[in-house]
Length: 128
Image (tube, rainbow, N blue to C red):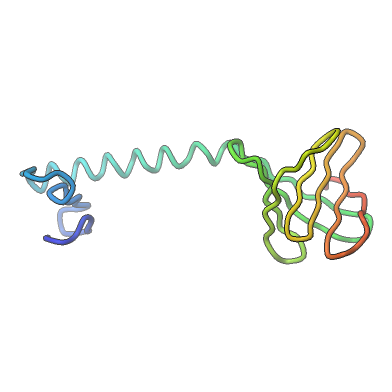
């Protein structure tokens, strides 16, 4: 098992702690138990950020449809428009929120949502 940090052998998941901690002399079963516990903790930690996200789909007056996603610890808006992904940075806005990037501008306010993309004029959009 030298040179490998992780492997799946006949004893299950083996975490080569001998590579991480010099002088550690753990037996194979203890390493497998630690590796399994580490894997469960990683999956549990990875599941919680997935709950803190919001996806909204919109339809615009010009026929454009897009999906935008917002994540709790990310100030950007992640869009799928015209068949491709676009990440929009949050910009300064007098009211509401404004996001822009790669020729796309999304404005969200109390009065409504507008989208400007592909050198087209801004168009009104509704959730739906």
